[in-house]
Each structure stands twice: as structure tokens, then as C-alpha cells.
Length: 342
Image (cartoon, rainbow, N blue to C red; front, side, top):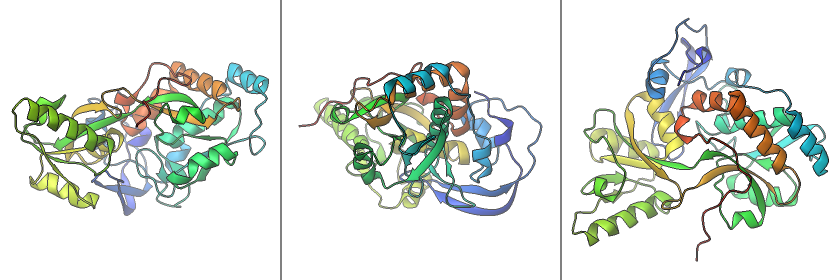
């Protein structure tokens, strides 16, 4: 997948450090960027981005994001639905801008306000396609459900997984696959992790209380039943400490959300992906835009997402943030969600 030349900059100016939430990698980010070399990037996404010195995490990145003209079918669908935006002419989008992290959604390094990341790019495209202005509102993760239900926000695009329980209150239009990734040191001898047999005897960093911990515990049960040595799970409260443990050899693998892992690997070259698994293993899981159930917005959103898939803007967003492995062929309205838990 080709990386846009705008991403490949000669880095000048001040440097800020952005810690990936739960990602364990510290990223050196531009405070300013100058002219881009006139070269064509080749190779894997991680090789291309690593060769590009770093992602531009300034407001300039927002100026360079893909755009789309209003999609006639989507605009017509929105009008026919009777949906009225909270603010006339705007699509008010709930996103964790202030508390987020690359590559999903986060505040630009030079103004601490402008939303950047794949989720910001997708939200801006949806607004474009609906003929509305992208109006992001930074929220805490815990606050978006009530905000969507109460009509405080029109929509959320913020790495929300579709579940059957959530579908009782919200409508969804899918736009990414929910993946978890196994990451190892760049020079590790580990080349592939696909199931329980591949983790036997390994030391794996994982966050407590997460889906990935549940998966590893289930795989360890499979290993124990087969008479094989289980993986040792280790926990760190600090992501930097977790990364240090991986790089120093005190752990073999870091298992965490693939989006953060792919971005970190591409940005630093210190790690590599050796496998992915659905965030809802053993079921598959989708990431989707969510609206208040029955408010008439979601069908138009799905039409826009599919228009961006057909037009190539969708792939541009994935390429910008190293998330090609999370692509989908078509957006679905209210796809099957993860089952309710007892």
C-alpha cells in the first residue's frame, strides 16, 4: 500500500513525545514539518512509514486529510429520513480527542485541540458526504453513550465495537474490523501467532480486564488440557514500562489493540506484528459509527462510507495511519454484534 508523499517529511522544529494509550511505545512527533522529498514509497506499510521518519501530528495533518463531495444518494436519504442535526448544517461527532492517542483519535501536538487520527478522518469524510460540516466534540469515553441517547451528539466514530446489547440503543454502520495484534521485537525469532499452540511457554504482556486477557486465559486453558506449558501473562500499569520489558527481553510478546500496535511498529521500527485475532474472539467483531437508534441518520452514513470505499478515500485513510489490515469490503447497517454476556 502506497504512503502519500505528504506523510514523508523532513522533520524540523520542536519534538513532542506522544505515549500511545495502552500501546507501550513512545512516538517522536513533529511540531513542524518542511518540504517532502520527491520520492515514491515502496514496500510494506510499516517499512514505508518507518522510512518516512515520523507521522506528522500537527494541524497540517488535518489539512491533508482525504475529502469527498456530497454523496447525492446519502443527502437524499438524509432528507427523506427527517433527521435534523443538533446544529444546523453540522454533523456533531463525539470523539475522545483530548484523552485519545494515535492512530485513532487525538489532539494535534501544536494546538492540543484539532482532532487527528483515523477516526477523525473517517468522521470528516462522513460529514463531507452528507453535505455537512464536521463538528467534533471531545468527550470522555464513559460519557458518549448517554450523550448519543439524549441527542447531545449526532454520532460517534471512535473505535466503538458493535455488540448485540448496544444495538438495542444505537444504530451502527461498520467501517473497520476490530482486531487485536501480537507484537514482538523487530529482531525476534517469533514469526507467527495464530492460536494457543503458538503461545506455549511465552511471556506475554497484556492489560488486566481486557478482551485480550480473556483470550489468553482461554488459550492457556486449551494448553493445560493438552498437557502443554501455558503462557505466562505479565501486567504493567505503565505502557512505557511494558515496552521496556519487551525490548529488554523480559517479555516475548505484547498483545494489545492492533491499531495502536501497527502505528507504533510503523513509527519506530522497534516492533513487528506476528499475528492478529478478532477483538471478539472466537466471534468476529466490527468497529462502527453509532447513532441514536431510529433517528434516521445511519442509512445515510452507510451510503457515504460505501461511497468512500468505492472512491478510494476510505483506503487513503487506512494508508495514512497504517491500518490496512482492518479494512472492510462494504459497510453494513447493524451487522451482527458480539453476544450479550451473562
